[in-house]
Length: 162
Image 1 (cartoon, one colour):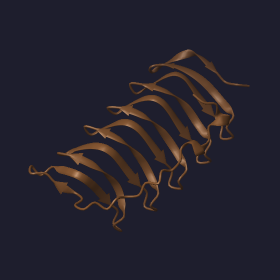
Image 2 (cartoon, helix red, strand yellow):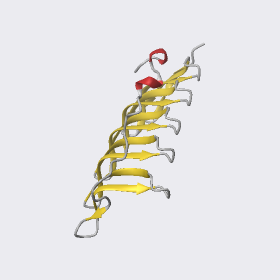
Image 3 (cartoon, helix red, strand yellow):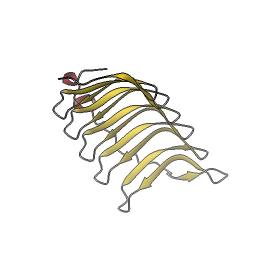
């Protein structure tokens, strides 16, 4: 974990991801299942979601965009589940949250940001439950609270800095 002073929104750079223009998007396999690069579009034709299907199942890198063209999320899917590192951004391009999944369950370090770019909170997940020390911050970046979690049941110890 990092301290609030050293964690800024610049640690979550907006990747230079733009939708690709596939030669044959949205194809179906011989059994009528989605297969290959797949795109969902807004009414104006801009791409809102892009990723790959393998015989009807989402696989690999998936990306979503806001109507304004900014990247909304990017992450990996395995057998249709969220699996791997994911990042989300606000419509203005600022960071929203990031963390990892294993088969749709949150795991490992997670961080969320205020719209100002300073951290809201940070901590670890195991099998979809908060574990260990979680830190919550005020919008100015100062520490608001530290709380220890034990896989879904909070520890008795909670510390609020003075």
